[in-house]
Image (tube, rainbow, N blue to C red):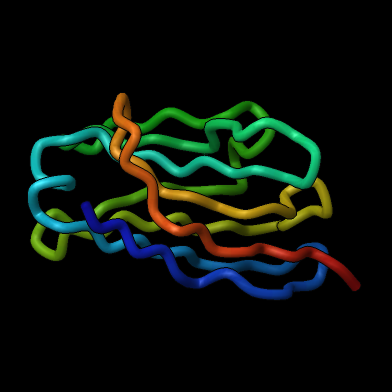
Length: 112
């Protein structure tokens, strides 16, 4: 099971980051992929998910600011995050929806 997330970092409020998660073919192919995040002291929460055909769902807190997409040829799912806020901080994980297959996470810090 391989899910490799990357792209996190430190960004100022209002800034942007683009996360990537490359998965092995057995995980990615035909599956709904999702991004979750976990802030310190809080439960992991769903940020966005995307079906194999490209249908998307977003948490209310990120609608209009985040965009999830996927490249099926590269077994990769992306999360474009714009207008970042301090409440977006946390470790972001990718996941095949409905499974316990998780990547190692990438840290997003929003601070001036």
